Amino acid sequence: MRKTGDLKLIQELNQSIILDIIRKSGPISRSDIAKKTKLSPTTVASAVNDLINDGMVMDGEAGQSSGGRRPILVNFVPDSKYIIGVSITNTNIMIANLNLDAEVKEKKQFPIELYGQNDLVDFTAATIESYIQGLSDIENCIGISIIVPGIVDAVRGLIRFNSKLQLHDVKLRDIIQEKTGIKTWLDNDANAIALAEKQFGDYRDRDNIIYIQLGEGVGSGIVLNNNLFRGRNGGAGEFGHISINRSGTKCDCGNLGCLENYVSWPAIYSKVLTAITRGKRTMIMELANHDVRKIDQRIFFSALQENDPLAKSIADETASYFATGLVTLVHLFNPEIILIGWDTLYGNTEFVSFIREEVKKYTFDLFTDDLEIELTTLGEDYQLMGAAAIALQDIFDFSI
Image 1 (cartoon, rainbow, N blue to C red):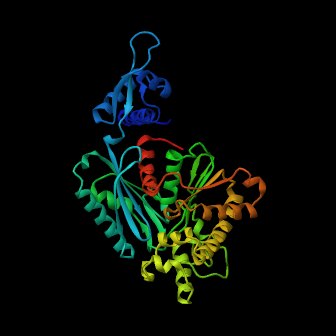
Image 2 (image 1 turned 90 degrees about the horizontal axis):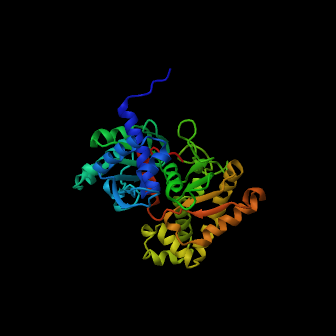
């Protein structure tokens, strides 16, 4: 026979459910909370009082009465607490203070200059500890949420594998939690951003979404029938490592012809350098003050927006390879929408339009008639919002 659990655990669960209702439906009366949750008015009143004492909700104006005294409406206070969100990419660490609505209050970025498992773990821990030391209200921090590319076992807080950063079975969640004494979460970046899209994005009502993370690497977060699909050990969504050319170059993962080697920024940068070395004229060099070391993603896409022939040629080729990979995903999962995250793509409708056309050209009409392919709807802080979404899912006990 299943045990009912101890009273404290039940109280915490009820409080989490009630807080989520207030967050989503507030201002709301205590009686309406009881109706929505099917909890007793006494339980609701006690939980709301605790939340008021914690500063997470507050009483507001009186609501309409159906007879008798007008009820006092309860409001969510998102700035009462905060989350430290950490986004680790292959080249930098972003760290931010986000409120309980996943709004970024401040953020900092630190380049990763050391590679190797021990170096990166030490650098990450030191960066987070240094950031915490600069906070005057650490008592209001409810946790540290970290996202990272690669195969991540979110339940165990373990980075199973990341070829670029040379990480293998790293217990990063436990390491950070032990060093800081603050509750810590860890998850894959694309999964986290897919979750954020479902919670805060423009397409939260869709049941089948694929989010693609582009830039330094390629990954995906897959929502099927309103559930985040992680695979057996957290490895689902390694979109960048599907092979599109069995005679292609060897990838860091050991495979040949991985999609990532054709559509990531390092692949684009390599093509730009090769063309310049061969004497190809391009405004990319002017934008970089004739220093190839200064060529970055923003310079490339700036040149593309100015219709630079080299940038356009490389972008078209990149989009064609990318669309080839998307065709496979569309045929496998039949999504309603594909969302693409790449901060340097904002405003570049031509690149996304070309991808749409290529996917439609090579996919069953039945699958593309209503398929939408758009950029992420979360704005420039989409990665940090993804980190916050992981913590908020646990705090509010919500499911997608």
